[in-house]
Length: 318
Ligand SMILES: [Zn+2]
Ligand SMILES: [Zn+2]
Image 1 (cartoon, rainbow, N blue to C red):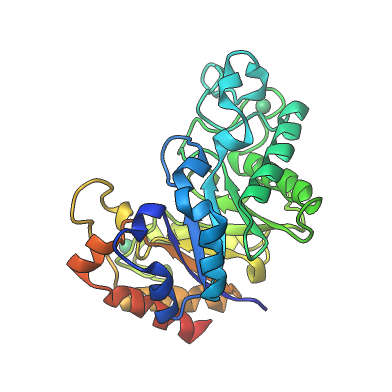
Image 2: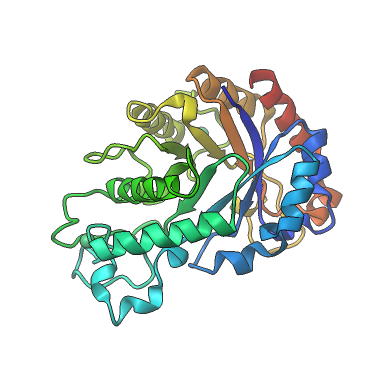
């Protein structure tokens, strides 16, 4: 069984630090390349040098795997069509008005066809070394999915999973065996109810609102009890062996996206170790964490002890 031990970064995190060397030194083997959160964007522009062949060659030379983890809503559908082709876009539940900055109406066959073609272009221009693809929807907590007559009985998770299924089948034409993530996060942080995953879709669990003062298994933490319950429910539908964890243990940007120096995350080694023990006890073999804003300024201010502790913990269990 392939294991993945990783870090997820945006291009500016490479300022003043040799992250390729750091990954090798920390015993990590997978680099996730992120184009950023927030409003929809052109992922190629945001990925910059990390989307180039030259950069990917340097990862091959360092024996690192890489994958692109992207909020790709505006790449999968051209959102400038929202006025001329409103039927492609989601309808909000309150007044059924078109949502111009969300995802799409997945029940519309024309939408499905656009997503198929655009996903193939994304995977062609942004190949991963693992054959896993992460083309997520809009980075929003609500008003993102559709409540039109055809979609009204589908939950947000159902609609996101339908999208992942469509992308996964389309990618088989150009990337045989390609695996596509269903992202459990924000409005899709729950098990799908009426849609089943294609054999080429896997679970990506991103517990953005978890608590870092307590382990996921700590029954005294009301916040994490909910996160554990949802993960265990998701694993009734998705195989743990192919599940991928996207954590925030080292994510400075979770605490502050603006000020300098970047903020130090709440990183309690015993909590992280218990979390990793728990994830792997479920059969999960692929674990990564955001470390956004851990750039040269971050390491000069806070050091890199936690990064190496993270690597040691993963290597103890994976
Ligand atoms: Zn719809
Ligand atoms: Zn707590």
